[in-house]
Image: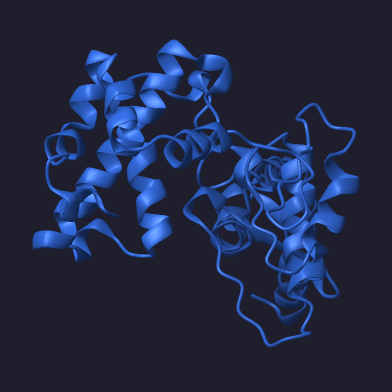
Length: 281
């Protein structure tokens, strides 16, 4: 092979490689398009019936280059979990940063004042608004997250409610009859109330302490069930507390015994009515 032909071949391969690279950057179908370009080039150069030489010096190297670029440069827009609504894109100063399958959770680590809220949390909230996600935001920054989220969600299809235990904005009744489908749901609510009031878990109570906890849970559960079934209008925590405070032990037991399920729930408390030490608390 003469030197001028060798330089010509390298020039053609170099120009074709640049075209291939540009196509991979511009289109997700570059692999197929590059083969079409290669076929057109072979058809154009095959005027002197030198197909074997063209295939050896041009086609084979360019096919190898195209395959290599496909391996390292080809990118698909399809997220790993198959659903684009769980794929979040963040705009950065050096391009685009993408997170796939946010259902697996995300952890943000940074020092105070590093911009975690404005750069990452705000990006998540914008995506949640775009995809109409519903959920609960625990605002641990004294309404800073609320001020960011409210403008995004106020005009959305999902109502935006603020629940504050310091300043009442929207009230929630956790023992409303519509939330309590059966006895198990009532027992769960009473157990959560006791655990939060005592600031301890059930697994940490044994012996006598567990008996008093079970009796208290049963009493609260029985009162909730009684209000739910017989007085649904008054099935609220304030009414529950008022009944417990105003009625003495005998009146409280009499009130619970008028409902079979309530009596069964509060059986530990009712059975201990003859012991002042057990019902004193």
